[in-house]
Length: 587
Image (tube, rainbow, N blue to C red; front, top):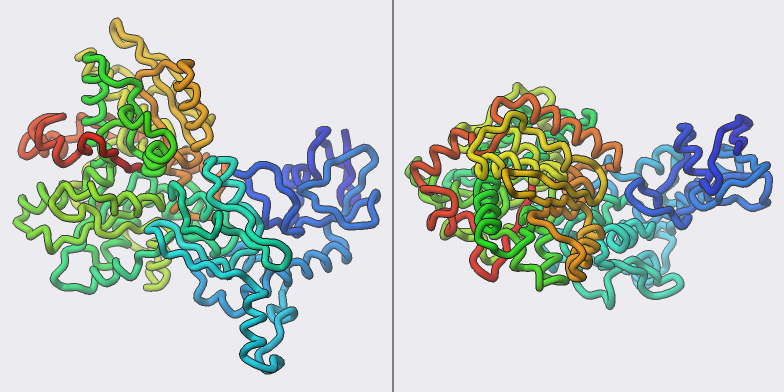
């Protein structure tokens, strides 16, 4: 089938929308409610209006499907006028707020307003035109039902910035199956909110903040706490950075997705005044050693199987809230963040003769739910709060811009060596399937007692939401599965309840493609961006001198001097959760 767009002929498939054909042929049409991670749009924002030869009215390109003889015009005077009016109506609630907005310079609505040269006060009466303060208050009430949510440690909501595009509703419902958001009230009072306006009750994955085109939903900011620690001469600020961050941090400063900026990241943190910068990949390697030991024990001693990875806080919280019967299946291992953190306040503090009370442990993470994880009551194995401050990639970038520090201009620096040596296996934690592959590299060698000739387990790689494989190890056929996005995890759990799934080991990540698509990563994002990030991860792993977690020389030293052996009493105390408690984390 063919379609004419702006007087040119294009090939099209039956059932496609006008917007899909335009995107494929790089014909730009502005949108605010459409996102590459969401199911087909419902034409809510009305920014994608186009003119056709079959309708007297303008139609939304994201909804209108093609048919024989259809002609489309995307940039007529009538189209541009309608788009501008719609944009002005959306923009009026934002008038005067942009300077203090967390998304300032990275807001989709702001970018379109600049493109269309919007007069931000066109539909907003100026204060001098109002007869009284009561009239002003009434106007504000009509503008928005304001929600400032301070009831959780991970997600911040400010509905003054909401344009009711419904992206958050759809991502939470369709990808994560939580349905924490919905439409409340009617008529001019209609707004996006939680059921009965209760505090946000979800798994804090942050995907709503990733797809939000404005600053209506963002991460809960901890920059002030971080700056306070940096300014205190009595405090030693020690930072750890997650595996995925070094592949996404650069995007905040204009670099292509997947650009490896490990050295720039460390240098930026040093310029900010951090005393030590350690690598969470070391924590990932530690997780693998302990997790492989636990898996082997469960398999050989007929323990609870399948064993689920415990490296995603949102996944753990999902199990606790909705499928508590599977809590025994969760690995008792803590996350990389929560494994490295207690070592900082015990092993490292003892070695360097530092009072742990003077250490402020900070982590730079791809994930909003890391903030929730750090505050869980069991995350104090060191005798103190193991992680004091969690910053997302976006928060760190905002702070650097505030301080006028451009990482691109900095000379690269290395992690501090005491807890800064990493492997390719630990680096793989950044993506879906990475924890599984890293675990297999260690587990297979430990079971067989033989060194692997080839370390890649490509059968667990890929972008599909759920994939499985069978690995033959001596006389054992190890059945494994990899799942990302909660709707796929739910399907797996339901099949297990029916006795339809039979695995030994299952990796689950809540976010699309794992931590590389986490709720604290740079925006905008989508499948193409995440694919580029993953390519960077795989390339880096391939070039690493050490590619197996159990070969990390720093960990060998830590076990020899401090922990003893995998699964030891000391390891259980610091690196595992107690019975009945679950561990959380990610990369």
